Amino acid sequence: SRRIKNISISKPIIYGNVAEKISESNPLPEGAPADHSHTWKVFVADPLGNDLSSYIRKVVFKLHETYNNPTRSIEEPPFEVTETGWGEFEIAIKIYFNNDCGEKNITLYHHLKLHPYGPQLEESQRTGKVESILFDEIVFNEPTERMFKLLTSK
Ligand code: SLL
Image (cartoon, rainbow, N blue to C red; front, side, top):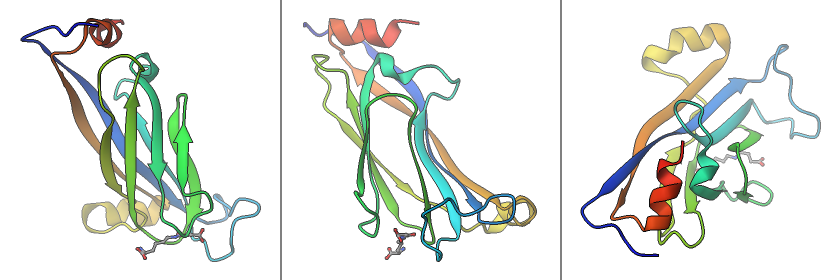
């Protein structure tokens, strides 16, 4: 469909990870390797909890090669991957927009955080939890009429 000139629409997103140390209250899931020290979840979401699937059709998370099937394709919300592990690494997060909307996919990079330091350290030692979450805005310049509708519905 045609593009609408001189307009740009930005959509807020948050992306990143939460993690928790293995402990009595957060036991290692069945089948996970014994050397894994944390459970973690990497995700892309709307900061206000709205449904991103109005304009996002899938999110592909590329994990470290030490994982089975490291390319995890998530085709409906919630756009997230839950795993266990012992180490930090960079996750490529590829976001695909709805078909026929004229937008190329984009890739974000997230450094998986398991180990707290600095201002997070004290609270993290108490709770066993750590997180690294960023806010961003995806800007759509001169969107197609179709994409404009998807971006402005609700
Ligand atoms: C690196 N940071 O870049 C290190 C390695 C790998 C993390 C991080 C578990 C994998 C598995 C895991 O935590 N891998 O056992 O499935 O080389």
